[in-house]
Image 1 (cartoon, rainbow, N blue to C red):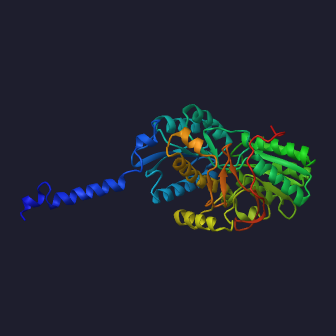
Image 2 (cartoon, rainbow, N blue to C red):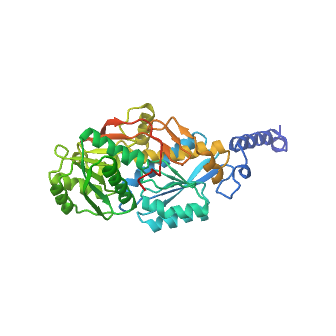
Image 3 (tube, rainbow, N blue to C red):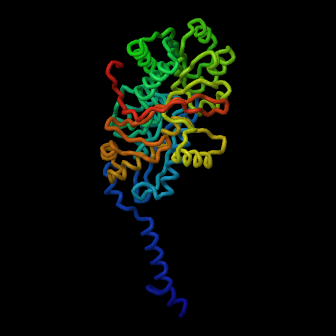
Amino acid sequence: MTLRSYLAPHGPAWRTLAAGIAMGLALAAPATRSAEVNTTGLAVTDSTVTVGDLHSATGTMAISEIGSIQAELLAIDQINAMGGVLGRKIQVIKEDGASDWPTFAEKARKLLVKDKVAAVFGCWTSASRKAVLPVFEKENGLLYYPTFYEGLEQSKNVIYTGQEATQQIIAGLDWVAKEKGAKTFFLIGSDYIWPRTSNKIARKHIENVLKGKVVGEEYYPLGHTNFRSLINKVKLAKPDVIYSVVVGGSNVSWFKQLKAAGITADKQTLLTISTTEDEVKGIGGENVVGFYSAMKYFQSLDNENNKKFVEAFKAKYGADSVIGDVTQAAYLGPWLWKAAVEKAGSFDVDKVAAASPGIELKTAPEGYVKIHPNHHLWSKLRIGKWKKDGQVDVVYESGLIEPNPFPEGYQ
């Protein structure tokens, strides 16, 4: 065979090239064409779908939110390794809210209007969520929000993968009242919507249901580092329980100054709903030994789903990395979105939102979750008792609690 005949149309080289192109096209071809799964102009091609990741990578909230970023990117890597969503690999546009709520709103608008992302995984504080919510509702975007929060909210445009007040605040107060015989409480928080609203709900439950008494209530700005005058007030009040909703980097000073002032677990019960493994890594486990956190997830949970998750997280981010409650809830976001998109057969936000109720994950590191029609998750409350190594012993676990973001008598 001459070189000319080898390269000629329908010769051996042509047939080899044609077969390769055909195989390549077959491998790259999505299960359905973009026009069929994207009727609203989202950033979806025949091979990719673009999503947004919007957290604080800088500023006082970075100590809490970097874990969420890492967990969401881990889930997306794992989903892509399985073939993506509806045959499309997920691409991520990362934006930094910089612990500043107007910046969160600006970045959310950019992701939805300019980048046309199919979904956004993001926010930590309720202040940041409240800042972006009008943007998501106006532009019809879809936000997966991972943080435990105060409730009193429900939106078609948000899937809440953390716990609301009845699952965390009320269930946690019931535990400490029963197990510690607590009657008097000192409420402490960072000064923004989540701690203030959480403590408003806590006060109603303490006074109206538990028939106890709030002997003090104090708030300090995010990033505050001097808690000495507060600690003196706590010493004078002598509460049965310090109820702490201190957020972000302030946790480091708060717990270190408590220990320096001699307020330790052998003398004082402290229950927090805002301190996870992520914060304790910065605080130092020796400064929180014996105190309690009330939330749905701890890194030390003993189940096969969690063992695989922890192993994958540490393989990607290092043996010294830790996983807190919000980090795990952030990991759920991409998986719940994938399941809803595939159930809907579409990336369109309205169809994905409509398909979301009833979606369940039996592979969740926390064990099992299911999306309620109110867009919150069924989940358990767990109480963790902190140890010197920055991990907890789980001393209590409830059954699955139905989410109720608008509990009667607490609004």
